Length: 477
Ligand code: SF4
Image: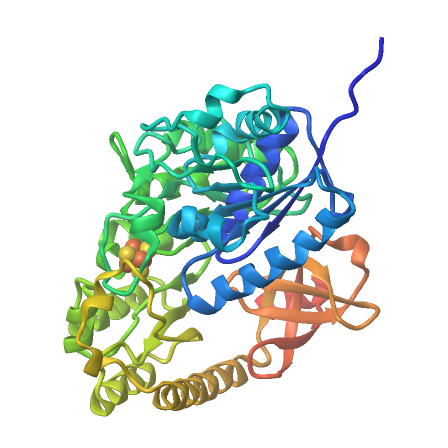
């Protein structure tokens, strides 16, 4: 009997952790239907570029990359190029027109049917599925044939959002290692006026707590010790009678799990119950990402963030009262349309008041389809001014980070060894408070826990040295 050689697929992912997780989901789906997952597009029969739509810059980069991949079709005209993820959902048919060498566009709710879509493309290419070429089917999970007579062959678009699709029952293909990201929620019910996510990922959908816990138990059996729960507004999660704090508690108590993190919470849903779990469950890390976005109430209102600077500061106080040694990080957007210089300075004041350990900083990026695009033209801030505000924010945030980290030099922290360091003979790990430490050590110990003394800081990260257990005992005495 002649066995058909298996097809090879390569998935290249851009963007946030949710997208990385979706990339692993697609790899799992393809692997289970017989595809070999390979490490480069040159070795693949199917190349999927899994995209992000959050910023214009990210989309331009992907368009450039897809055009580059098209070069591979010169020698291999049968190569399938697919674009998946948020940008595929946002651009849809326009993307197929702009990049006619793309064979499939697929939004974030279409991945379950990925193998069937690939089969259907092949059948259409072979002329075996003519009905598909004439029919545009509508409704959830359908495939829409967008271009019947493209010179380059059929192109398929799978773009329906599906409120029932949260990929229950499907496993991701994860890289080996001590840490795993586990999505518990997809989509978002908020409508922050700058954000494209609700339009490309749909409303909030939460996974069953039973399934999440079963997955984490299975990961622990495979040697995973650190879990990060993932969701667009992860702390608004609720499944039947299990709200997020209860899920977090149950995850923290799974045998073998030593560290639990979660991202990204919405400040509005940071409550006493959550803080109680964070303060009492040993495995929950002393780290919280609290996306502030702005330090000015008028801007927050126009962003539709649903909190004020005052309530945000109250939350920070509550968090620090419950978990005194917590490390806080944030996201900030500068130059939101209409932001005055004074309002921008309120954001700098917020940074100086809260003193976040880390900040992810962005210039506002206009996204078609979001409410902010309807603001008057005169509100949009000149790129040079936006750049200057960003530079000032970064300088303030780095200075604060440097001061905080310098004050932590000398501490001894538990470190999970995650990677090799940049220099030979070095390894890199992370503390429970999410601080990165580099020290001398053997890469064979990746996945192990140890203790390190933080000896100096480069500002963002630490250089340390491993501490003998006997020293730890002395330190404790
Ligand atoms: S909470 Fe706001 S910023 Fe976050 S994903 Fe939802 S709409 Fe976007």
